[in-house]
Length: 96
Image 1 (cartoon, one colour):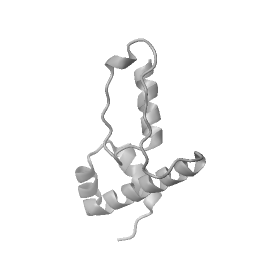
Image 2: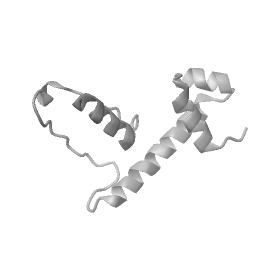
Image 3: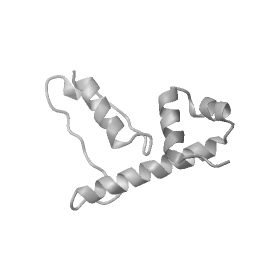
C-alpha cells in the first residue's frame, strides 16, 4: 500500500491520535508510520546540523536556564521524539 509520506505524517500529526489508533484507522502497520517519522526526524536533524558550523549530527547541545524561575523547570526529551520545531514551540509555551 503506497502512501504519500508528507500527507501521511501531516494527517497523523493533525489527528491527535496515538500512533496505534491512527494506524488502525488507516489500516497500516505502525512500523510503517514509525519508519517515516524517524526518517523525517533524521533528515531534519541532518539539515539543521549543516546550518550550524562545527556541529555534527546527533551531538549534544546543552540548554541553560535563563530568567526568573527558569531553574525550577525540567524537561526530559526522548531522542528522536521531537523535532526542532516542536522543541521551539515547547520553549515558547513555557516562557509565557
